[in-house]
Amino acid sequence: MNTSEIARIVTALTPPHSERSLAAFRAVCQVETIADVPHITLTLPFPVAAIAAELEQKIQAALREHGIEPVRISFQAAIATHKVKAGLQTLPGVKNIIAVASGKGGVGKSTTTANLAIALAQSGARVGVLDADLYGPSQPAMFAIATEKPEQRNKQFIPIVKNGIQIMSIGLMVDAGQSLVWRGPLISQALQQLFFQTAWDEVDYLLVDLPPGTGDIQLTLTQKMPVTGAVVVTTPQDIALLDARKAIDMFHKTGIPVFGILENMSQHICSHCGHAEAIFGTDGGKELAASLNVQLLGQLPLSINIRQAMDAGDPFSLARSKETYAAIYRDAAQQLTYALAASGKDYSHTFPQMVIKK
Image (cartoon, rainbow, N blue to C red; front, side, top):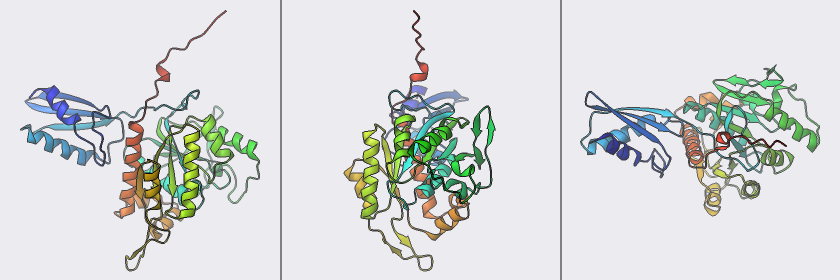
């Protein structure tokens, strides 16, 4: 069997937990025969570390059915910059910006942002977190960096780096417990300063932790900043779903695609007996996703371990655990990268600049 036929077999497969083929993702498969052994190099448009072992087994099995073994397989990621709203330019040092919103407070949006960031980083991506909740910044406490201060270099803030994740927040610039009594214009200006004057270092995915609601900060973000897409966090409770629907409607009205809904606190699991109880209702986020034709990224339980880890500023301990919720965060992050990879790419940087002279 020649190398082109091997490449066709490989790219016809689907990556784990996806219905799209590698060919549909525009994955590039290079095959070279060395000492009668095919060496396959697969270049993917999404992080691959979390799925590499499972995907390799799938490829080996498919080729074995065609009598091709042994083979050598290697993976590499080539994460692209994807298109944003017309009239906006992508941010230097950042390929893709994902807004994490909820519409309603208290549903675990900041916790979700932090854990998605960690899952993306573990998958091999370069990740940043921008805490856009200027009135109530949570990320400094969640990452245990509240006492650190960003350096300034060439009039730009240098983000704090924790376990490879680049983090910027207004909470790093004010004293703990200090409130910001600012009106809308000042808040909008502060957000833009954080956004455009931070020296992000080659970030594949920048997660923006938004405050609740659809007010000044959200409008500034959606109108003036090159957001690639959004994730909406909700609980199954009817009241939370009402506000989640409003958040999704806001993104639709401003031309920003919603890549998925993550249902938080789907059920409470007793730490003593393991009994599961749907305190906030059942499948509310799942039903909302189905009704709006938006992907459900996952359903996370209400767990004391999650709360304790976030309060202690150690979300990394969750990612290292073998608990179910750690796997849910990892799968949600992977599904998010799939959705991004399937969206349109940004080609504006390839266009020549036109200058009209009189």
